Image 1 (cartoon, one colour):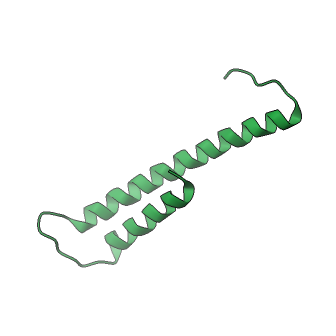
Image 2 (cartoon, one colour):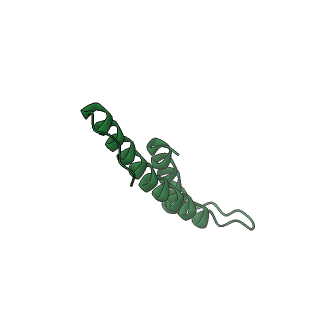
Image 3 (cartoon, one colour):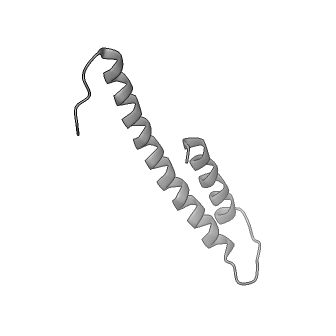
Length: 70
């Protein structure tokens, strides 16, 4: 999941959670919105961690250092 996709999930979840008054049988729209916001937040954190790992590897290769095992 990319960072943009995570932000999209957070946005859609917030709209469903805070800005709708729709009542659907057997489905809580508020709960669906909350789940989307949590999934988007988790995806955002994981995307930022992955971005940090890849940028650190790219810096090592460009500076000529040998990669070490972590």
